[in-house]
Length: 567
Image 1 (cartoon, rainbow, N blue to C red):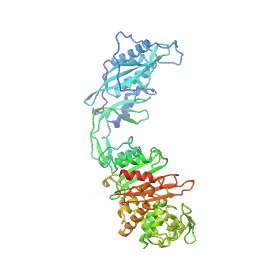
Image 2: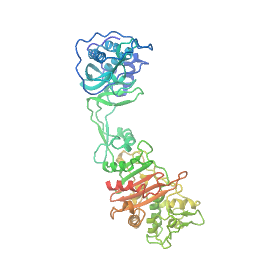
Image 3: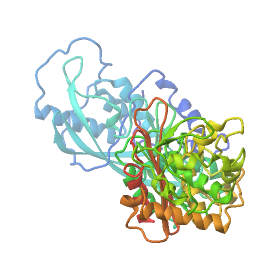
Image 4: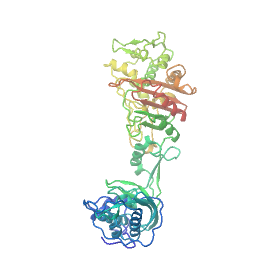
């Protein structure tokens, strides 16, 4: 392959003569690298410092492709041999002598192909590679590459390194790998310079702070989804011109060098970075845990976090019974039926309704003959609730659920488990009593239960949204909300759960504008219940689940409390 003296890389243009964009890069790669079919190990590049090459370098001898034959000499290389070979390679590369530089490696053909591809694909028209500090068997060096593309000229300086070995003839030679050209290149990767397909989309919180998966691991999937989902609906920006790695698998890595900055566009979400940080910290290290927070006045989603962050999104996609946290909806139905928080609702250790399924409480000592609905709610007495099933009839619970928006499809702005539970029928009394205490066929997520707490706190249902309503294509649910009487009764009972009930230990520090409900949900095949907890404080409502964790007040409760404190 002929040497490229002075290295003037051809500009990558289409038939019209204009600079190509990232969208046509695959065709370019095929055209530029036809000669490289079946060849692996295109270069790699670094980004740091080095030393100047010395004078009096030997003229490189032309080498043949390495073979399987044993080396003529197995003697260890001397420091002088290593330094001289490295400097000769870097000098030849800097002179644009790709043939000579490649001949100083243990894979001349592969190296020559990669060096040529580096100049052509990245639009590099000159290189200066300066030796630096010695390394075991090799040398660090600095690359200063001059790039020219689409009328843009730029100098790119970065660091790399190489090692020296013996080739098949026993002579010292640079051990060829993609990392010699640039440390970001893997085998089969190439560098391309061009124009991005689209302008960058920056996803921000409600205050304009950028959100990234590195800082907020639980948002990694969501950020990618939002960019793909809404990029076409945002004001157009100016794509950047730069150099990036086109990987062997056809994907692109991040832009490594910018020739011209683009003007990106912003996608503002409803998230709050402070609340999100608290949520990430609260679930970190837990197994199968998720938490969501919403604004009680608008339904705006403030935080979404789950653990492990690379696993299932337990905050939005949880699909299991919510346990006693659902008693908020059941209590609303009973209040609608004419009960008050002070209405008598005896709590027995074991009980059933209409000779149906027998229920018990979490604690066998939990019973009180003169219990009220408020006491049952605060202490989470199952039997006190199921004995009131006759007040609800066939549709009472479903009617109450509708007031919380739970019988409609939700379009939040990113994929979620929607809020539609399976409601009981008059022919299934055991299903009704099971659902009254958050079991049976009910399926909820922390997002849904955070919304339930928010509706209880404000009296109004606001379907949760992650982005502006104008961007959401699907239906946004509406519901009548709660009467002032029901809303007031729920706030009283949820406050009692903190002051005298099961939520006291974890929520005791919160003031009179707070309320909570604990929950534990039994699931088939699990030895331990899932812990659930939902609460509100001021303008923030949150809910969490922790799988196989037992009581909600000790497992999910601290997560919710930490999120509410940040809000």
